[in-house]
Image (cartoon, rainbow over all chains, first blue to last red; front, top):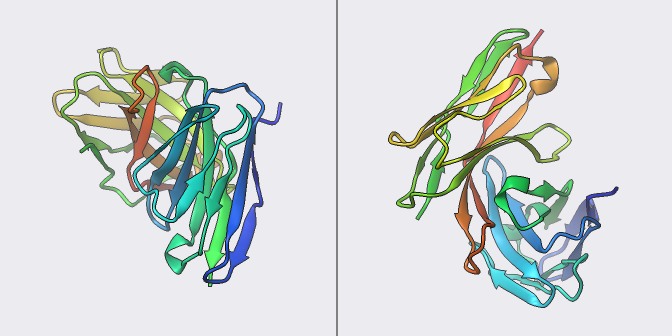
Amino acid sequence: NAGVTQTPKFRILKIGQSMTLQCTQDMNHNYMYWYRQDPGMGLKLIYYSVGAGITDKGEVPNGYNVSRSTTEDFPLRLELAAPSQTSVYFCASSYGTVNYGYTFGSGTRLTVV
Amino acid sequence: AQTVTQSQPEMSVQEAETVTLSCTYDTSESNYYLFWYKQPPSRQMILVIRQEAYKQQNATENRFSVNFQKAAKSFSLKISDSQLGDTAMYFCAFMKLLNYGGSQGNLIFGKGTKLSVKP
């Protein structure tokens, strides 16, 4: 049982480049989330999805895009990377009721130079 | 808007002793959920304990327990018999319901408390 898998684990981007952070879960969870964690801070929600084909913005969506074509996958797209996007990115999923909480991936450390 | 405040950036405790991490939050909602997450150096976010606001009884999970004071909007975490493996960042989080309703929500995190357990 893999849980939530994120790839890559580390990446260095140049300013203006684009990339996609991959997230896959094998628990048949309806809800999926992308968070970013800046140094010395808690996590902030970028985008979330309540099911295939349905996504919505979180607290800090600017500079990012998402799609949810399947229940398992929830990729995060960075267009025109900027130094302000240097952060650790976490994907998470949940069953849909609070009692089950969230399952987090192990994170992607992204540096934009 | 909901906010979560952890006033202790760093704490340390001797192995086998007890430590309490503080958390306060601000909300106008009456029904919500509170969580403590642990983030060890591996970066993995691990759920430690959860509390439903409508429950008066404090949640416990083995060596971990909370002191939930709803009127004071306080949610502290007590770790008993501290172990070296408890060394980690600890995040307090408040769950706000998503726009689509239902019973799932967005977690709003505090800035964290770095706990070091010393041998």
